[in-house]
Length: 306
Ligand SMILES: C[S@@+](CC[C@H](N)C(=O)[O-])C[C@H]1O[C@@H](n2cnc3c(N)ncnc32)[C@H](O)[C@@H]1O
Image (cartoon, rainbow, N blue to C red):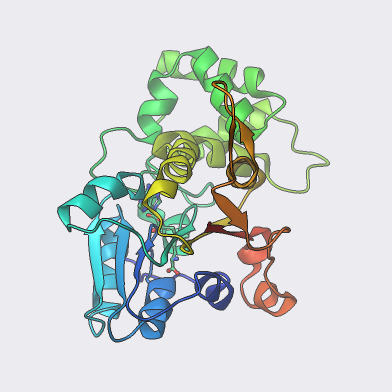
């Protein structure tokens, strides 16, 4: 890591208090990042509470390891949070007695680091992998997906109306030579999408879409929320912070499904297995948004195992 690791923890108190931290219980922080949530949680569950903190980014792990060194109750693992079952089994933990936190998306460091290729504001090799050892990057996506597959990524994950026009222009451009850098891609986006009258740069949505696909972000959150519930002890909580509507829609839908009674095909009903702790998402305060403007799109939802 050559650049300084910086990240502003979003809704730190709200998220950690949302987990209802108690000494002696086991918590998972699925998205360690700079370790801001893990640190506060670790302080609140001393001396016998435990946290297993997951990340797949070596830069985040190296930074957080130093920050969290004083807390002997935190175990950091370089694993995807979607692999929590294997990690629990390796650590011989049967139940998540406290809860699980997911603070989704990329960290400030990842988004602004020139070397990582997440930002359309700096010229870098197309990359966008959270895990630098993963074998599929934004470069592979842009240069190997078919025109139709690209259009689907831009349409579904970027909600881009002109997805076909953009994917056609990418397919045309890469016939001459592979598209290597963020700025080469930006040039094609600029030619393909109407920039006038747009409040945000259209490249924002396209880069978001590529990042989601490269890292399997939506699949990971959906699968994890569906399979984690049986591992939660009664009273344990799930706290999720999302940063765009695609993520929030998934969390809202799964929490709703799991908190409502379900008629079973074989007859009878399954009671709700979760209870919504807050009906409406919690939003950052005006003060937090002033201090850290990217937090403005955050939404926090909490559910509890019944
Ligand atoms: C928004 S940051 C978390 C910031 C952290 N809560 C803090 O306060 O410092 C999200 C982190 O999740 C990590 N991440 C993304 N997908 C992941 C996955 N499937 N498994 C584990 N970590 C993941 C990213 O690498 C990034 O470091």
